[in-house]
Image (tube, rainbow, N blue to C red; front, side, top):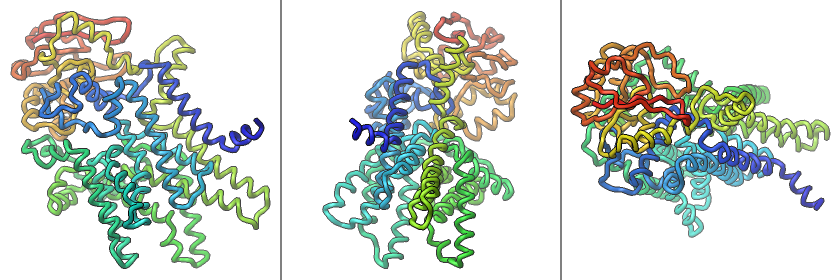
Length: 590
């Protein structure tokens, strides 16, 4: 027993990580759909689309349409082989979302430890905690698994390169072919392939011969993406449909503005890749960068500056930030479109999605070197212990910083805080929980009351169309970055009266258009995922009712009691509410 207890104490970091995963899963299962889950680009986007595919049984369907945005091809939604999709194929939507978080953390830890082992590093407290910190980063939820799997991709490619052409390489080629299951081509895959091309060139020069094994890996990974994401490639390469991508406009910034963007994204990251590095990781990395290179200069070891892997990572971070910034130069975008026509309109600044891994890899190097400094024979035992303790405490601190201070998608903290607040005060926080956001009970009641048929089209006003999609209601509106320009033009006729009244809303829709919503003609936003619904200053609706009727719309589900309903030929059919939700839904019929 004493021996077992000793092993547990010596592996305390594994026990803590295991307890964290168990505790988080238990919290989500106990709190259930009362959890506070991020809405922006999450509940209002992918979760609703996955639920819609559950409702319609279209995960594996071909030549099928899904009932939003007036009916679009199922091929425009995530493929069925992506691991996140598989979870929604097998489990209820909320459970699938929770499992996606747990799997993301596990994949990150496993991938990091495999990669570190391949570099000859120890799987000790420093390795485990740094891997854990990377795993719990609150990144774009629908693609959290993609972020987490980056070290796994590097590990597979390193093994293929190191082993060379051999029977022993075959399992790694198979795994590489299957890697797109935990990745996504247009956000990550294209760049991984690009980086692989650079690696092939680099190793070819360094080794003075081409790396045949890596060249084969390039084709294997490319084939994996093409086959496992066949829907995406079909839509990109073999469809003649003109999409909203052709009319999307990005900012054309001045040199000063671009420089500001470069510095800002380096310092703060961007929303979907907000890794909380600003709070601790960045200052630690900057201080070490200055210390490291000052030491090289003092020792007159200039070669060390150019060969130290830490400086290589610093260069990668700068590169990703520069690419992010220069994307906002119209001249650069036009040059890219001329040189590589298929990239016209493509956001090539998504290289920034790789920065979280680079930041935390740099952070690991610092902690590892600090720990190893404590193992040197020439220092005192007390100093050695102190260095080792600090080397472990720094990543432990990073874990708490991530859990407590992440600016986006921090579901664990938000759910824990919101639940504790309710227990202590007896009141809810103002934001909507997962259950309240979708309000299934209320919408089931509405559908039952009106005898709703899935062939009847509707729009949302004052709520996200995703709420209707999730609840099995066919919508003419919706949120998607890739749909027909013809449909955007048709829907624009519906909202033209609102766009004519607000220039910023007009630019938002015309220059982007992914949020194909009914907009207010007065307020910047009337869609709020909050319990209190305040700040709406104008209850008139500014739409072309005839254009909406031409799209076969029958219902408007509104959180606002529309004051000019008669003028717009809208009939208030009924008002719905119940104790399960703060929504009051005014159902209008054209």
